[in-house]
Amino acid sequence: MKTGRIFLMVCIAVAVIGLAACQKKQGQAQGASAGNGTLTLGLWDTNQEPGISAVIKEFTEQTGIKVSVEVTPWDQYWTLLEAAATGGSLPDVFWMHSNQAQRYGSAGMLMDLTGRISQSSIADMANFPGELVGLFLMNGKQYAIPKDLDTIGLWYNKTYFDEAGLSYPDENWTWDDLKAAARKLTDSAKGRYGMDFRPHDCQQGWGNYVYENNGFIISEDKKKSGFDDPKTIEAMEWIVSFAKEGIAPPLTITAENGGDSLLKSGVIAMSGFGSWMLSDFRNNEYVAANCDVAVLPKSPGGKRVSIYNGLGWVAAAKTPYPEEAWKLLEFLGSEDTQRKLSERGVAISAFKGTSQPCRQLPRLQRASLH
Image (cartoon, rainbow, N blue to C red):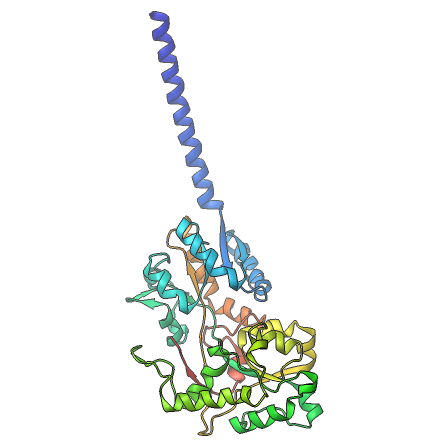
């Protein structure tokens, strides 16, 4: 009995010591993670990754906070993000699109930045266009730091214009000029089309012309469709006429090929593309050698519109590193960082006054779908 009691006491002592050691070890590990863990930064554009990684390196040098930049192609980004949200493993900081902001914000997946912004000397929403700030504002709470501002331009093949003896598009171009040039640039024998309109692509294509013609897609109160509006119908009939006349690719081509692929392969002479395509086109040998960009043509009424949008930097609501994530958001939204990203051609930075190329563009009337 005495031997058994001694054995039991020894076992209890060992268990207690082991538990204490385990707790101490666990506490040390948690402390190490909080102080030296690596933040994950999620985005979807490989063309922007080099510029972003360059400024992230500066962030790490300044703060000692390590960041792993993870790029997921657009086609998989939202699928994987949804799975990560369900599993509680969202990136610490990541890109948020305005189309998805309400969904993730209302589900409690995004960090509420309102209080942190109010106490920050760096993150001031007055430094960004109010329309972009509003895209990520829900029930009085701000969930993102604006990243960029995009616009739509008319990309054209200079070589084809030169061969046809046509002047390049400029700020004086109208719808009539666009269509006349498209006719001359179409060469069915070579499988070449003058202009490209993609049915699925509102922002880069037909949506701009609807608004230029004083039509609309959805009313301001989000209760009425504009597709039965006479001005909208008129614009859409004009767009469809390109395909009917054979000066735009048929659906059999556009359904299988992206507009960027058609421009890169010389199948189309003109098309509308967003400013986010600049890095991709600049790095494409064919486009860099043969193409350029101009503003969109004006409507018969003299109106020019470019649909705008913008991304936001957000943090996961349940990130294990909330303070580090906020420091990264502040850094990414600072004037200095946004200017550097603009200079690197990453995108048209959202911070007011940091994007020289944007200031050089003619003033456009902008329309939002959101």
